Image (cartoon, rainbow, N blue to C red):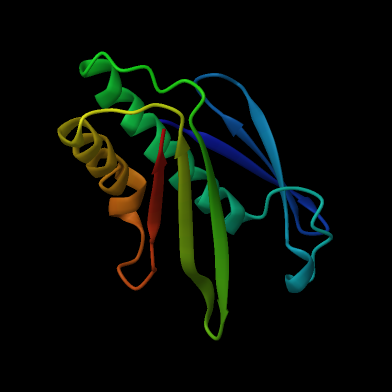
Length: 134
């Protein structure tokens, strides 16, 4: 179990503290939803969670396969639905600077597609993932 402590600071800003490490982060509402966009919005954190979870889960599989994924980059693009307001689509594009066997590639891509965050989002949310290898 991990505890996250959250304080509402006013003016649509929150501060969250990660219990185990003490690291903090701030959020703000996005400009298109009454905020100033001065930090990650809560839905931006969902996109961030998806991308980092996919990369981390791939990294775990890569370690088992004795493959180094250092230098891998990805971009997650978040698209909102206006009514009801929700995340409609999180599209991820990976740029992986190595070449692996087709079997290894399949294992690594499957790890990204089945990471805990991807398995936790609403089934109506679109999650297209593109991989560019080498």
